[in-house]
Image (tube, rainbow, N blue to C red; front, side, top):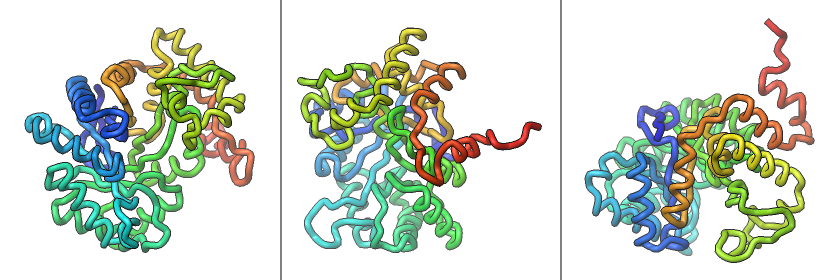
Length: 343
């Protein structure tokens, strides 16, 4: 396992993070604890959850594991999130001081701890002034309830606005952002990645294998069935079979991933994870798993390093679309400094 600082903080985390959205749903408590044990044994130290994962059950499962493993707990970095409703009240949502106070205290109870290392806003709240949210987070740090804070699913301007507000008021700045990011989903490179790099915020990509597409297990026009995420629920939002299957870019990317995997003697999943780990600003890649076997296959990617030629080949075939102004070829070239005169 490799280790890096958590964004612009001094905390150190493993370059792979265990995502626990499956805990309490696709993985029962016994399976979840086995996954946690395997992750720790592999050198993992970073665990990510959220209050809404299985309606709080994910946090409870982790809490019982932490209580049963006091030695491992001392080395583990715990991250959770708040923002979405856990009840029906009008104040039981968003990033207001009132909701975050209650949500954080509830997460701490479920986890059985007095402190979490990273507390993340699960999504932007257009109703709550950003100053109210940031002041609460700064106070929570001062109170010893959280070590750092970050965001998830924020846009570039939202990141920049939050960072500027924190700096203006002298509050602790954010350290991380959790975006969806993988070889099939690279739209964040237009605005979100530059905003994060500008603020020295670490990226924690979720869905690094695009819901299983980048494992190479799907084939064009062959709709999956059975015990796969798409086979069990083919209408599942962004992972719906139809639109991606009909997009020629999907299969160009997957075919290239398969080709590279054969060349380096690795799995398509490992190649996809290695490419993502090499991208600017990436601190730790969030791995989701339903079984120990799935986890171990993905952990193996930590030892795979792709050379520049392979990274470039994967980057070119998966280049994000940018047909609409102000994006497009000129903006992409400028971002990569290709428009600068030769020195």
